[in-house]
Amino acid sequence: MHHITLDSQTDFDGWRKAARTLALNDVKPSDVSWRVADDDDEPELFEPTAPPLEPPQGTFNVPARFVELAEVAILHRNPERFALLYRLLWRLRTHHDLLELATDPDVAEITAMAKSVRRDEHKMHVFVRFREIGREQKSHFVAWFEPEHHIVELAAPFFARRFADMPWSILTPDLCAHWDGHVVSFTPGVSRSEAPSADRLDEIWRRDYASIFNPARLTVKTRNLQEGSMIKPAVKRAERDATEPYQAPKRPEPPMVRRRVQDDIETLREEAADCRACPLYKNATQTVFGEGRQTARIMLVGEQPGDKEDLAGKPFVGPAGQMLDRALEEAGIDRRTVYVTNAVKHFKFVPRGKVRLHQKPNTPEIKACRQWYERELAAIKPDLVVAMGATAAQSVFGKITPINKNRGHPIDLADGTRALVTVHPSYLLRLPDADAKAREYRRFVQDLKIAAGVLRKSAHAA
Ligand code: URA
Image (cartoon, rainbow, N blue to C red; front, side, top):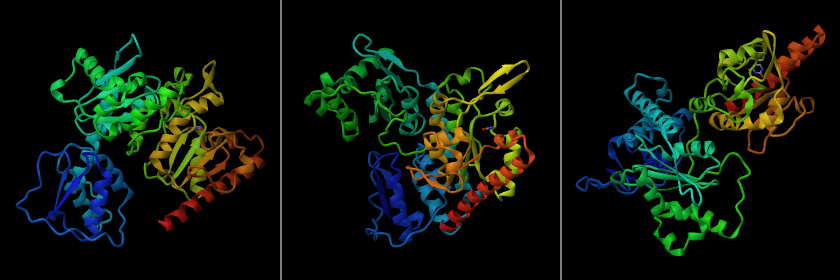
């Protein structure tokens, strides 16, 4: 029997490394036992321990979808999850399409686990209630939450973004997350027996955590009282603050400690539904978020939803959408395989009688909305982003980017993403001259054919 001990309940990297070594050494799932270092149960000593494994030779591929599922499902509280994941990995080596079999018991179980984790994450986003503490000195906001699964690390970035301006701590029995306005750090959980009433929250906060957010009181003694290395980022930051004036973080996206799991599109869509980052939400019917498969290799970015999109809650369903559909088809791209979104997610308009006249979004609105584009990009990880029109190009490139000067070839962005610039389909609709319209439409299709070519090349390389 091979006894594998993972560092923590959420040690995905540890699981992945062990699973790879086991699989490459042809170790059957029934010959592996999995535990976590802080579990109370010791490995079964009467089971003979297998000799150490050879370092892995060679490699094998699993579908990206499996990695996405596994990263989330591993956060489930079911102790059998590590074994289940390894069994699936083992089976995927000879049955690459296994995940398509929704009725397979292992596939059904892993899918249900991942869903349950996502539901719990959403519950945490919705139900955490902060209480203000220490008003007389420096406010801090503390909340108590008991998650069903190991989701604190998964859920914490949401709170850092939403409550970026206030220092907070979320105490849970598994792990506590802390935000000092700059970085998220984690400390061990608070015991359930201390399950805080409002007053106990205050007390626990003052006793265990207040010092790490108050540099003046950060002495060597208090530092030594803190447990383990997980506290380090917060201490480091506080030490720096003791000598340097505090500087608000420049980037809206906070740096994360131990942030591993990417957002999934459905969670992002739910979050964006409440977006108040700019005033456009006030008059729009709803947030129109991106649409398409999370596994899409091409991401198309437009400007903002129009009248029809605002009512339907879906991007590119009106006249510009029909033009886009036609051009995609001519370029040999199936719309169902791409992810379609907009740089700005709310409809900007001025009412004129019964109609709502489209208004171009301005730079502050584009910037305020860019967080969603960035997070969609991180979730989809496409091979190519196609920026349609000037607003999309501004969002994709992070600066004003002229279309004509840049269209016609893929461009590498600093973060490694490849981008292609082209015109917006609405531009084609507005051209009054029929010849110009036909000519510009052909150029648009030509640009989309370049995108199709990139797609073919990356499919070959995979
Ligand atoms: N124009 C856009 O940029 N996006 C839409 O979704 C519709 C029209």
